[in-house]
Length: 361
Image 1 (cartoon, rainbow, N blue to C red):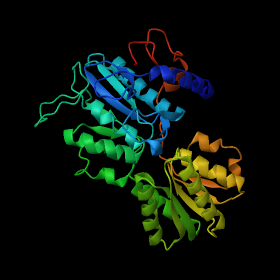
Image 2: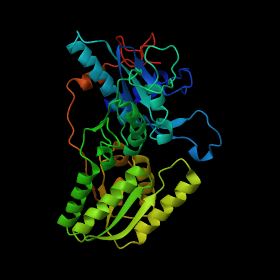
Image 3: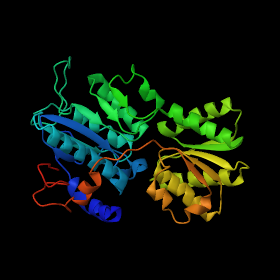
């Protein structure tokens, strides 16, 4: 079913997320929209990266690439949930949504609050400047998302000024629990402190007292790696090496060198256990390099890639060694699979991903 859905998703995404011209708002910031009296925003990294960030010399539109089916499904889950609320609570005000593609990057995501803070029922999608925003009514009443902690931090910093609720389904950075800095941000999963402590306990349980740690050079990777190192010290676990790896995989000259250097460190290290905190595209590049070099270790995966289908389906993935993964307990959305199977492939009348009243732009 998912292979067919992948074809549907990739074919339809260009249609679902085609440009819209708004006042001072980037053309492609809004991915899918349904009108309503109460609008909920959704932040999903539907694309994996922004192209040519390192070569930008002036402001302009951002080009995203690397379609991510799993986050597309998460966006569909939000749409489906809103539809179900409408069906079950038909007397409530008409609910709508605006879903934004953050392209897995803070630079792209910083555009989202601008749209969220646009004035409700205004012909111009612009943020009005006021000395006092007490009575200001923005277009979005609450925001769902984002996946990555570093992007959630950026968005939450702006939404906090206006106390717009932001509920993240996956961001787990401990700093987001600080209600002084992020008074309107809410986490639905445990913070990183619990995951890194569990990792240290796992390492201690198997008596692996000589390990390496690798993290991406962003808020996500650095914070989690430092937290693990701190917890490892409590169990007298020695850190053979700890390295940061470039998170900008689209800058090939810099990133390939970084990948090669990290791979060389892993290959030459006597540590047989590696803890890896990184996003899926980085993990894939690193593992691809290690597979070519016939490097095999025991890996402990953070939640960001532990359940990734892309990593699991990587050619000769078994050659990198054993992988222990940490993830969060998941639930099943009733009838969601049936809903996905009934989606039209780009239905007529610009109704986007749904047959009914939902609209996309």
